[in-house]
Image (cartoon, rainbow, N blue to C red; front, side, top):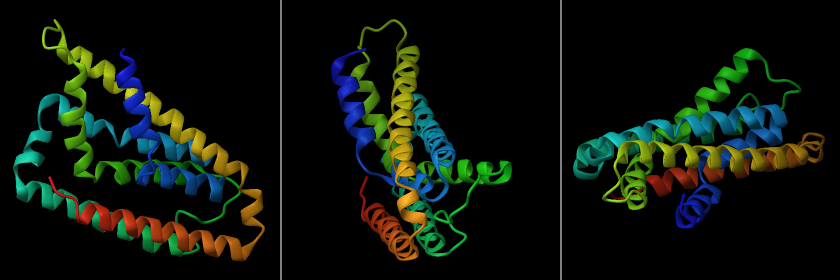
Length: 203
């Protein structure tokens, strides 16, 4: 495992994005368990992109304008939906003492959808993973799977740290309605900004 791969992966994972934002929101509104569930769901959302890169399906998004635009605007629509839901009292930032089984499943699915509906991730892995696989590697597929697993582990750990820190701040937020309102608006604006960034993305 090269230091270059680990450092590059850490920079990519630690950079603020939809998955990290969702995990932080879960930690602030519902506590540490919810933040870990959100981190897990966001990490699962990376799997299809990595699989697409490994089998070459990501190349379709890179070469087909129609496929890329369709996938892209689905992602934009979902981010705008998340922004709208965030402003509501029963949205992702709804304050709850506990997370039930049904809610946990919903949070996991939301985390998966947030990351899966981003075609730039597939293209990123299409360009990213092969750089760290030697041309004379006897088992290139196995190597890419190994690198993907390491990347996913790093994603979960970093997101979990974000979420647990957010949950630590939770008591300072939920007891102040004005702070909670400001927080909802800020996260909604962040989802809109990420949607706008995705909408202007090119292949």
